[in-house]
Length: 188
Image (cartoon, rainbow, N blue to C red; front, side, top):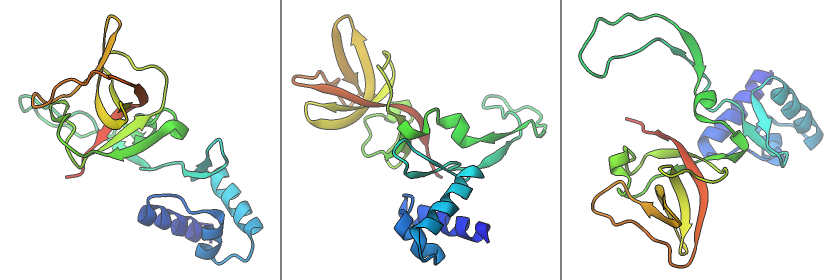
């Protein structure tokens, strides 16, 4: 029975791109009280299906689940392929260091195309400390949001696109680095 409840919550997450509130879970699973939802959520958290953030909100614990890691593939000259199950890998663990500080953004525009980031891709970003020179960042620069390389030359900080059609951005009023890009997801 708990699997059925779990599947309803996961379906809600997939459909709405967010976790349901306790009231929404109550309606999804047909419970009459939030206390029953609280107990269900705690069971699912104990099983590792979901987790809670620092505010106590429900978050998915395994966005992608585990998939088999079968070995290597040559991207240069073809070699004999040998498939062997070398391990199981959770994409969450590979891509996400701090779940509470991590979120996805959909890319619009082509200013980072030479970095392999295309319009329509999703970027995994993490709110964290100071960026290093060369990090790809999400920044609020002079009141507008953008994704660019973070560059620091001496005391000069600027944002550099990965497309020769665009010029570097030198902040005139303000620069706030909101997050650092950790990965790119592209669906074919």
